[in-house]
Amino acid sequence: METAGQSYPLKVALIYGAKPSGHYAAARAVAEFFPPSIIEPVFIDLSEVYPDFGPFVARTYLQMLHKTPALWNYVYDNDFVAFAASALREAILPFSSQKLADLLLKKNIHAAVSTQAFSSLLITKNRRLAKMPLFSVLTDFCAHTYWPPKGVRAYFAPERGAAGELKEKGAPAEKIFVTGIPVRKEFTGPQPDKAAARKALGLAPHTFTVLLTGGSRGLGDLLQAALALKPLLGRIQVAVLCGNNRKLCRQAERAAASKKMMRFVDFTNSPADYYRAADLVVGKPGGVTLAETMALAKPFIIYSPLPGQEERNTAFLYRHRLAETAGSPAELLPLVRRYLHSPATLAHSSRALAEHARPHAARDIAAKVIEALTGNGG
Image (cartoon, rainbow, N blue to C red; front, side, top):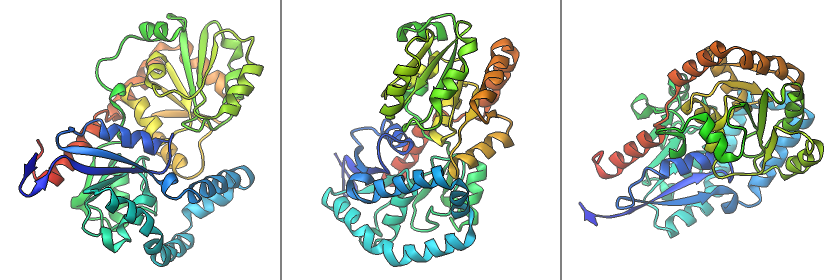
């Protein structure tokens, strides 16, 4: 297929930090809505392009959270640190971006969709990629300092507050679109009732179900949170999504082997099945996790948020009265008990989340990208 000098399908890179991750899930979600006759999605994993950088950053981040979490808050918020980082970007990123540029040009990439700030920065700082259309997708309910204010064809923001933050950082208002955070097709469309969803997973079909999730890495004290709910087992059942945290799964097998109505799930490519089965979701407030929870209108309890973006996501939830926080496993039990015994509270929370949901964000983002690249929305 060829139109106006362009040969279709156009190769569009979907760039994310690593997989599994929310960034990767968002990239997959957008790609699901690209018609193959128009766009050929090419997935680019930054951790493979820069194999030493990704593990170093992740290791440093996790060590900082474990030893001095207050320091991460300082680094994340401090204007001087942001200024210093900006100066570092100007000096180092043009050089660092050469490897990514080489890969994109070798693959004949026509445009890029970035679901991670670092890849957006790399592209905007490379002269060889100056003419490549770049679309930046925010996957948290905030716009932190590291999103580039220039060189982006369109920004896709989760909500108006984040769009305002992008404007304050210098992004042109006409390039910002409030679409929501993209979620995969499995989180949209007609949903089976909870009993049917539970039965398909081998769960008790008529028992109140609590889903615990620690995101793709299975972070947070999920085992202790699950064990704290032991007094309610029988009246409830608990499913824990462990992500790729194999250590957690092994610990759970030993600690909870004799606990009926409690299941620990290794990494799954179909988390929507468990969300559909749940009455209540408990977990870290990652942006994609929240978007998926909202899409299915599942009441949410914040548990073990990480400093930085997840604390900003928590602030968003508080601002709109969409969730409560369990600060410890002991605090989780009374909150879950209240939802169990108050269908009205459960229903009110479900309605509130549904009102803020944007389940068709991926479709809308894909449509905007297609329109920008082809000159029409069809």
